[in-house]
Image 1 (tube, rainbow, N blue to C red):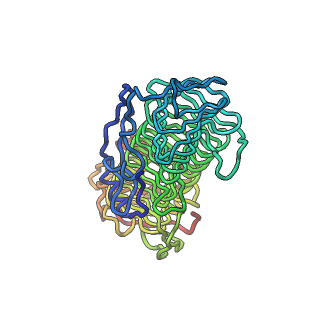
Image 2 (cartoon, rainbow, N blue to C red; image 1 turned 60 degrees about the vertical axis):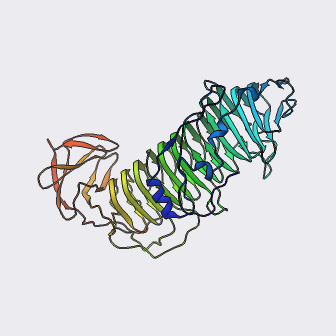
Image 3 (tube, rainbow, N blue to C red; image 1 turned 60 degrees about the horizontal axis):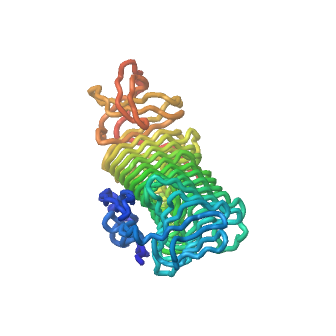
Length: 520
């Protein structure tokens, strides 16, 4: 049984994300069912990040577990009052409308239990593979799918199949260690296969693993009263399409007691989240290296002690902070201050945001990109459509914001502006408008020869705009225009100055902050 290292290095966490992005081809079961493609990069250990080649060493996941002999499958038919296993399967026990799997093996489930449950109660070294092949599970008293014990449980969605799991609105057993999710596992849990699964968590959560969780493939829709999908030690999305609607947090890893645990990785697939609280959340480290993440509704979009984006496409909409490095255990450092740092003398904690690639677009009512420690941008594209209120800022960094590459456009209010710090090796400009410009305003920046170096269209009312890119040279003057024509994606793009109005000039690298003290 493989487990994740109990220590980590933040420096290795950021560095290895830059190197991430390789992929591994998916497995194919011997019965002809595609297991789905996998690609992987993980979170930091004491020396390096998990990669596609090593993810099986740093989590419970092993692509070989998605390959089996069809002849060894045990067919289980689900039917009210008449569930049965084919042949004389010693590993399956049926008691009324409770089907219990007690041994390692591969079990193919089809049919329906409108008020029953499937329980996995295998040995601590057993790997139990359950194929859902047109299975409908529901319960009026609790969770209809519970993994009580196993080394690993694999839920495989048969290609072309439609499956559903729906729990009760109230649970008969509400004890401390009782299940509290429609799909609940006390063991490491893997979801794979290319079929579809609808999970409805009426009582509390949708999918929960109290150990490690790997989403290797699948077309999965989760609706939950509280959290949508939750792993404890780690939560990993490698492939598939996962759509989550949650009253609480959307996709999270929440181990807050074990050092090095509580991390979350997205390295492929498509994740869509609408959450009443946080969209994607990790207790420790949150990494996005590949795939597409869309948080369409949230209080805070991405939240963890350490957040790194090295690839993929990320869209975040939030009523509070869009990206928030906070929480967890913090070691306070020197108070911030000075050009490019925070105002208000706020302490710099053990938190970080590192953007080295990919595309990150934020639409926030609170702070846009917020770190209670330091932040760095060395590649990729970062667009922040930040707050209209002066009590928050598009960029909010207690320590140093170091910009050494990529493209940054951070638009928001003018009251709490944070700009690139003195350690930045890539220059930029700060535009503070005499009066707030409305949503839909085209803002363009041209060099002394009239050549456009940036075109940005505001998404909401904007008082300040910070721009940084490789085409902006420190010490040189640039002319700011509004109007003209623009063809943009995520706010940034190409434009022309025909019909534009000149506002004035700015000098690259000369920043004037307007930030005062504010809440986190």
